[in-house]
Image (cartoon, rainbow, N blue to C red; front, top):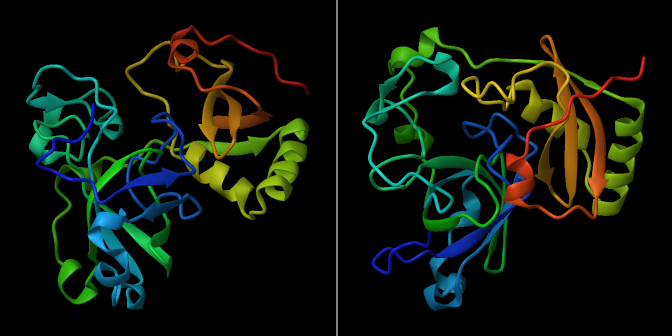
Length: 253
């Protein structure tokens, strides 16, 4: 699915989050998730970005290009409602009549035509329709009501790292020249990325995985603890492999 011609993307987001699974369900849940957005030349970034670097945060308007829904569904199942439904317009589900989102991100810096961002909840390759500065004086409403979300917290997991995973994390940080990878993995898995309505994902001890940066992060869940098992480099992201039933594994003691 590509954005309609009448909605012209200003650029394509290059995110460390490579697939929908394990991508944060809201912005800022994983402060260490990073991305870049390079503004297309036709929008004259040397002029159109003038003044933006003085802001700490920006609004992104993404186009949900990976949506697969063919028909409109007026009710959806937010993961935090654990099977209960709510109207689509009372949610931030990407499955909407017009698949357009709204996401706030920290603006780390502006470098030429490129915005460096963090606290991202958008997958790599997302078309961005617009960028607007976040204005704390007007965009923050301290007295706002949180609706049904105030009584429906996100499911959470404790996160542990196997010995192999700790070695892999250190190697990945050195290879990618980044820091804070263990914290990022903990933030992503701590929010329990599994779909509570998908029984195939929720059995104890399954070998599950998601692509992040240049590796495939494997983990398993037992009880309320997710254990990072290993980070595999050189793997190819393939949707068919993700649809195959995950295998159950035994954790080393």
